[in-house]
Length: 115
Image (cartoon, helix red, strand yellow):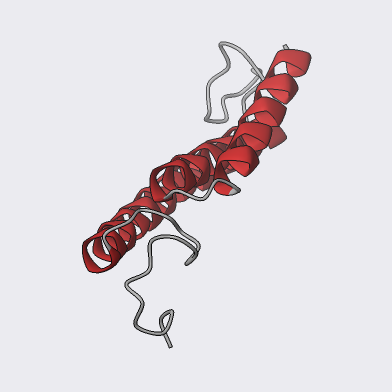
């Protein structure tokens, strides 16, 4: 099970980095989302993978560590907010420049490249 989780984390990270290196805004947003999923799964797996164990301490029973679950919930909220901000920034850049390219090679308006 650990091998599958590690493979999923690696694939999510590789795909996220690949999409971040694209020159269009939508793949960049998608790459950021995939990277945040990879980090979330990594944080969740850092607390030791356990099946059918309660997250609370009971006498005589094993339990899972609730700290990674709390960290993942916090990371999900933060990544959702960051994704919303990046989508708004990409939409604004598209409206102003007329192109969804993140570099300023082909889609600029010709007004000096932003500065």
